[in-house]
Image 1: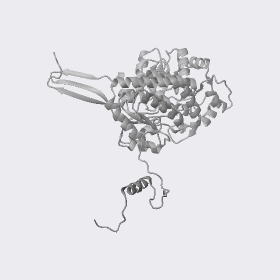
Image 2 (image 1 turned 90 degrees about the vertical axis):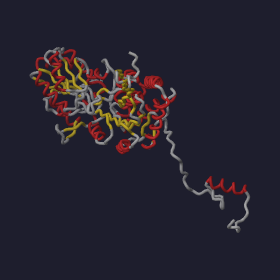
Image 3 (image 1 turned 180 degrees about the horizontal axis):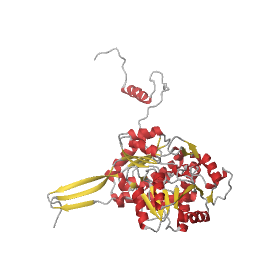
Image 4 (image 1 turned 135 degrees about the vertical axis):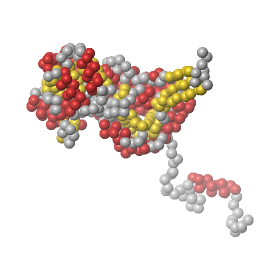
Length: 487
């Protein structure tokens, strides 16, 4: 052996030196150098809340593979029910926290929204298999998962959207990485951690739902560009939806609304005033599907104004309207020349009116104003309890102005009428995803109406009132040569 000048050393001494090296200790000095330890990545998170996008995605990806490989459909049913129970247990807590953190909306209305999405969002039961059997064989089409879904949620319905998307997306076999609105990150983290615990306690995989602790636009970009994220869904403004559509990823987008309402000459004005007051004041009008402007045909105009005041609305005079425009809106170079002042989005009517010297009780949930059809209150989606009312000479004029106000969003519209022909003509002209007749527009998403509930209304991308089917791919399986036919 070469190097015979080396000193003899026992195996015990070699082992001691190796132990020191492994421990980071210099064998010659017995001193540990001041070098930070290098940790291998662990995707455990804080009950689903992660610091980095890549960690949240990787954890969700592993959970999704486990979810589709090792769990049955009956497991999905069991875990979705656990999510519903968890939601019911926390609904009052989360409703209070949303108002506290976002400074928008009303607690009692948020409770109603939460209960709607908890109880009326469909689970795996809506994923029905279609089959065709014939001489050439058997064909079945099933709903299969995309994989990891990136979900961007709004400040207006933060935990409500998180609950709906969680039920719908995991029912379809997916996992989720949430990028929530920064102004609702605290309540969303508490909601996600509670849902995460409910999933794990019910026997489901950890990290089936994850989120970023500090969400930003940069984390949205990182989420969108990650190759393990197969589908992006966004609930919020059109700027966000358009950005997702440009990403190159499959996208489900829920954008702006500005829903118009028509009250025609045949309408029951007492019913119209009661339902429009209820809908336009619900959660201080922050919902994208809430009534935003009303077009009343002349024979019913005075009656409608009288009845909506009877419901509790405060009628602004012309000078008060001008003063309120300066507070609620800001100059902009868009079509109307204005954009909403976000400071007042979702605030109580009494607080907004106090800014122009009008004192009303907090029980007054809505301010109304008589304006022309080109007024900025009509053309700008305010998302606050200030409702513009436009007088129209004919039903045709009301339809024309309503279409202009809706601005092609094709989101939500409604009509109060006893004339079926009027209902049909307006539906064909306005082409909105949600169309409600003789009730609040919130009935169109199952809040006080029939049908399932959602807080992700995908108008721009066409999925409409989303459920588990919306977040699945259609897969076809063929069995040839007669298939399983016995007849």
